[in-house]
Amino acid sequence: MADSSDHALAARIASDTGDMLVALLDDPDAHREGWSSIEYTGDRSAHQFILKELTRERPDDIVLSEEGRDNRARLTADRVWIVDPLDGSSDFGWSDHWSVHVALVENGRPTAGAVAVPGWDTTWATEPTPKPIMSRVGERPRIVVSRSRRHMDGRLLQEGMGAEVMAVGSAGVKAMAVVRGEVDAYVHGGGLYEWDSCAPVAVAEAAGLVGCRLDGSELVFNKDDPWSPGLIISRPEIVDDIVAAMSHRRR
Ligand SMILES: [Mg+2]
Image (cartoon, helix red, strand yellow):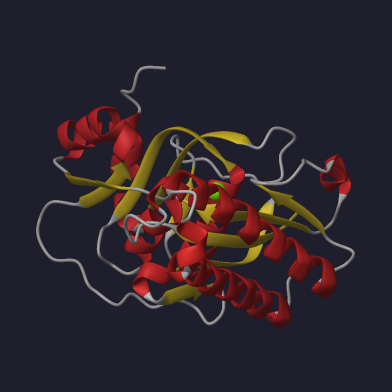
């Protein structure tokens, strides 16, 4: 099982990758070819950095990265790191809504992980356990959804449970908004890749939140196909209401 050095390693790598990406944005030379290329450079350089660090620190582990090839040895490996070097890359350089995800998966479950959100100057990790920095007020649950799914997921949550809905980019940023106590839940009614959700779920669960599928069932990681249908990250007391609201979605 993950030990304290795995938690610390996830946090350190996520944080250092975030710093490297901020330095890239601040580098005038990096902008010479325009903003579309900085996204690409960010994705690639963050991936290379994480791979180098994990290969040096954990040479026997396997890495599944959004930006790397899928090493099928992961399917029989005891320890697999699932990483998104730059989540929300279309916001990279445009807003604070991008993040770095690093998580360790053992037996299908995330056992250590970290999400860095440099725009919020914070890296959240599975140890030390995150504490909410804001507390919820108001009668209506506040739920964050993906911009691309605002009219689908957002409407179901408004109609089904009277939720106040907001939309921002990056799965990691949305999940950390729940961890911060800024919103009550993050709901995604469509498909996501495991690197989008794995580290955010690891951190959210460490914070006492619930991570589950849209029907409330357990999330499993390091599957043969890393594409996963739907995600809920929520304060425990409203999970059942979200599952009920989302059960009306078109399949
Ligand atoms: Mg990415």
